[in-house]
Length: 166
Image 1 (tube, rainbow, N blue to C red):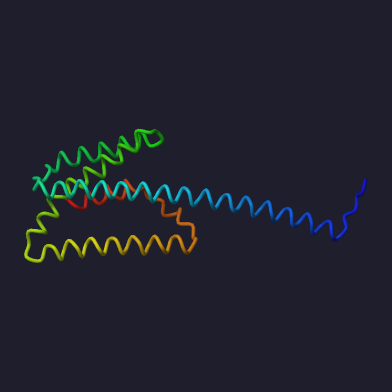
Image 2 (cartoon, rainbow, N blue to C red; image 1 turned 30 degrees about the horizontal axis):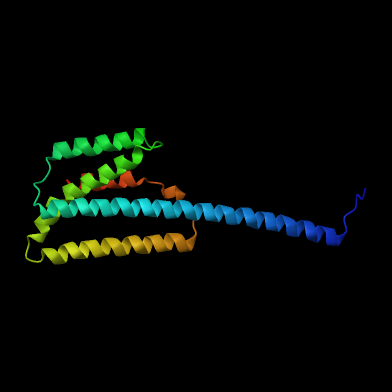
């Protein structure tokens, strides 16, 4: 039994440890990328669904939803999302929430489209929102900083947006 390590043995051990560390770091990065990819996929699907329901409301010239009914439905959905956040029911609830928000945004967009320069206003708002989202996403991904201290849920942000819309 040899109790002494030679310098060559230490280099081999350090190399093995580095391989293990880099392998686990690579697995962690892949897992993080998978979560990020799934999150962006779900976000894009809900935004597309919201846009589709808003388009349907615009095309049908839907009347605005009573603000009391809107608050009850939206806050009820938020409470239901909080209750079922770890179950499969949360996905349809998120789609219902964003779809309802899109439907209630339809009459507001119709109002602005009825103005003389309404198309310009709507397209400017849409493009600036898209540019801001893409720019902030690119910064968050490329900077590799930990933004977990800013942990505000998507539904929380949409609730603030709804209250501000009123």
